Length: 234
Image (tube, rainbow, N blue to C red; front, side, top):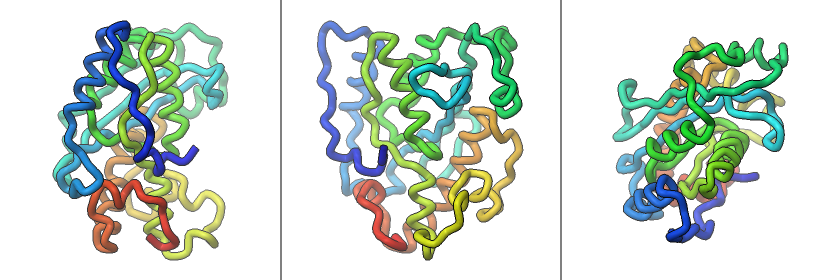
């Protein structure tokens, strides 16, 4: 799934039978005036991450969602979303070792449906950003559909793909070169709170800002240019 090519994706229209949270989301989305010529500095980005029980979109569940907003080239630490999803599951030692979340650990956890609604309310019509975004988008979509809504309609950027556009010779890069850990090392980003949803969202937001700066120097300065099919070295 290549998330840089969803500029021409057909938008789902508002229907009277849609649940109120989905109607509110579509109304916010339609009110957003971003077009392909919108300058990057005029965009508002929501950088997000999900921690899950595993990597199977069909079987696994969301444990937590973290998101931060980047606007006018700045990251707002105060304007963030962090929620834990209440789940009853048999923990897998390997995944718990990564995210450190045990079932029932957080007293203020919410249902998956409520978490999905919070996420929609937070993002509005902003451009979504994640690292290896296809998985996180698919997990959020599954939760939204289960809640009676539809799939995300926002434009989506993948920092892994953007990093390849910045790289000089991506076609000969070693395996793992564009992983989040490796890119943090490359761009001098601290990996504190790594493998938490809020921590990974914050780290990815810092990476996004560094990548946008480098892309702008190469003439990638509009939303349309960001979403265009990447060319070698650009």
